[in-house]
Image (cartoon, rainbow, N blue to C red; front, side, top):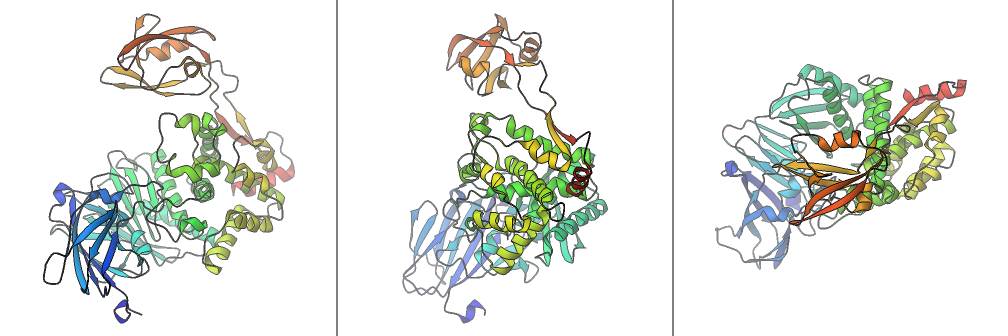
Length: 581
């Protein structure tokens, strides 16, 4: 029933762009049927899918509530993101405010004279206690802006409807002159909106994205949408993506489409975000919806949400024929490289990385390499082992595809709720007919499994092809800015770490020879050093000059390769083909 027929408030927004060249938009929020002495209007502090408190309220200015005659209505700010408006007997008010946006990303507002990218969580206030009510959003574009792209239901050319604020907040809006084309895939209308130009081939993209959509729909059994929007912001250099209920926003380089490697990387990004249609947006831990937009929403389950998705993105690209087996296995091996070459993998588990994403993954500091890992990469590693174990345990009759499809049907389609991790594990074990506790426990513990015990099941092995290298290292990375060489990171367990070199130390000389920022002298010195040799660094720290002796040690960097076993049994060969199919 329409909210006009109920005794609940109605909310309508209008967005206009009189100062967009200065990175401001104007918002009018019209509220009716208030019937209360005051209303609290709140701005979310974060965006689902991007787990960081972003304090969007900091960009709200010129907040002004008025009555139907345009008279000011009293208000006060009662928290960092809450405005209390004293309505008394007023049944209807309009709230005017401006929003500043000039940060290039898939999760933040960006407004300029060319276009406006509107992130609803950073733009639209909500009435506290009323996230469930519908709203309309009217866009008043600049005269020369011809297009609006969004997953919201379109009522008129410039007006859209959201059945509740969860849907509104999950529906980014692009306004400008983006290049738009539409196509059908898996029975769903898809709209591609390209912003910022680029050398893309529409026909090729349509064909390739269609293959991705159809493969992912096959995996999950059905597609939940009637319409899906892909908004791509093409920059001089860019990347990243953010999933939404029936849309996604991607970042790419304008020239990414010229090069086969970067083009496949873009397709993998499409596959990743599209996979989130099911995994995250619908199949999800309980903490990931309904949301609390006022604070962190904690879960240990992001290793499943992002880890599973990170495993599948490149696998889907392989299944679609864009990667061959060697390319795919190289990408999977790189997940192992990224994790196992960080000392942090001995400190933080995948589940802990998930829970602490708000303060670690999204807020990395100079010590992150030593103290943290990514639940994306570690999750992908564990997911690969899970898929392999299920295939081996069922002699190829069941794959991870079958488990996630069953979980989607059980928790979303049947129960319409999030899951507890133990529930997910129990369902997976029921379908696989075996315990999967080793992998689920590994997600909650630091340290490593015997990876070859899994890969060998399907006739493959993972080997460190750099194990016998004789290269050496100091254990630092450096920055070069304005003629100054400074330490960027110091890796635990290395000579630099034990000697006490610090991040931000300025490196002046080694063994009394001044360093030239234009050259790669440090690399040259290491290449010609011997194990155990001591290098005397002359450094400046906080304006004080000192010498620090640093021991050169073996470079234990791992370079993994996943490859078929030379002598596979018949069963290993069969299961390996099923894994790679």
